[in-house]
Amino acid sequence: MAALTTTLATSACMPFGTRLLQDDQVDYARALVFAQKRQTLANIVGLRYAEPAVVLPVSQVIAAYSLDGSANAAAALSTQNNAPTTGSIGGGIGYATRPTFTFTPLTGEDFANAYSRPLAPSLVLPLVQSGVPIDVLLRLAVQSIGSLQNSAALSGANNAGSHGFFELLQALRRLQLGGFVAMRLEGSPQGNRIFMSIEVPAQASDDDRADAARVRELLTVPAGTTDIEVLYGVADESGSRVGIVTRSVIGMLTEVGAQIQVPPEDVASGATLATVGFLDIERRPVIIVHTGGKMPDNAYASIKHQRRDYWIEQTDFDSKFAFSVVQTLIALAQAGRSQPIPVVTIPAGG
Image (cartoon, rainbow, N blue to C red; front, side, top):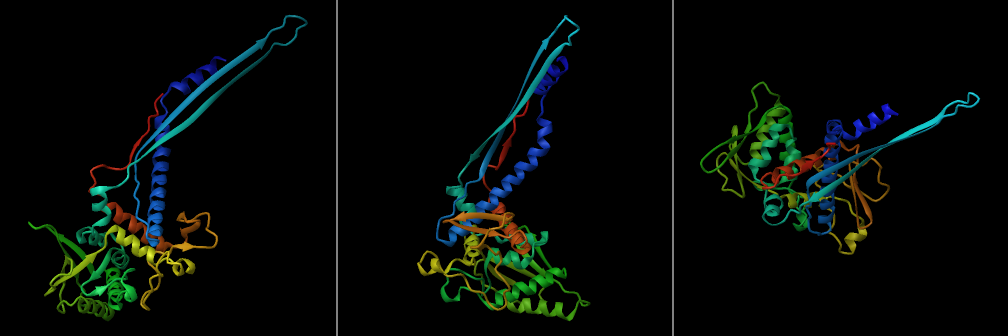
C-alpha cells in the first residue's frame, strides 16, 4: 500500500514535460504541416471555382495536460481456526490533454503583402541555388520571361502559353543538372540586383553548348553572354538584361487550379472555366490534383469541396515536390509579417 501510494504521489507531482516534449514537438509540427497542406489545396480548388482565397493560419497552440492518481486498500483479519488474512488493494491514474488552438486570419496589409503582390525575383530565383529545379520554380512563380508567356487561365484562346517559354525552361533545367546555371545577388543603393550566370566550359558536350546558345537566343541576349541581369517587369531589354514578370501567391494558386481536370458538367454550367490546355512540349500539369473516383486513404493532401473529393497522390513524387515548392514560396511571401506563427505553448509541470 505504501509503495503504491508513493508511486501515485510521485507520478502526480513530478514534472513530466520533458517526457512529452520529444513527442509533442514532432507531432504538433507534423499536424501543422498537414493543416497547411490542406489549406493550400483548399484555396487551389476554391480559386478554380472563383471563390476568394481564405488564409487562417494557426497563431498559437496551448496544450494543457492533467495527471490524476488515486489509491484504495481494504483488509480483513481473522484469528479463528487459523483462517487466512484477506485483503485488496487498488489504484488508478488518469491522464488527459486539452489543447487550445488560436487562429489569426490574414487580412489587410498582411494579406496584400503576402498573397496579392507579385513575388520579388530576388525572393524566387535564389531558390535555384538551393537545388529547386529551375523549370518547376519558373513554371509556378513566373508569368513571363521577356516576350515568352507562361500559361494563363484568363487569357482566352492562348491560355496555354508560348512554346518558347517551355523550351526555355527545359533547356535551363538541363543546364542546371550539368552545373552550368547559377543565380547571384549583388547589393546596390537601389536594392538587390540579381543575375543569372550561364557558363559552359569548352570541354562540355555539344548538347550543353547548344542549350546555352538556345537559352541566350530565347532571352534575346548577345551570343556568349555569361551574366544576364534579371529585372522585374517588361523591361527595356538591351544588352545582357531580361525582364521577368512574377506571379503573386494568388496568381500561382489560380494557375495550378486551372490545370485541374474538373467534371465537364461544371464547365458546361458555367461554374468554372475549361481546363487550361497543354502544348506538345509539356508532359503533364505541374501539380496533378485528382477528383472523382475513390480517394486513397494515404493521400499526400486531400480536401472535400462541394461534396467532391480532391487529392494529390502519395505516389506522385513530382506533384508532391512541386506542392512543397508552393508551400516554400508562400512561407517566403509571409516572411515579412509582424506576427510570427505559430507559437506553441505546452504547460506540462506538476
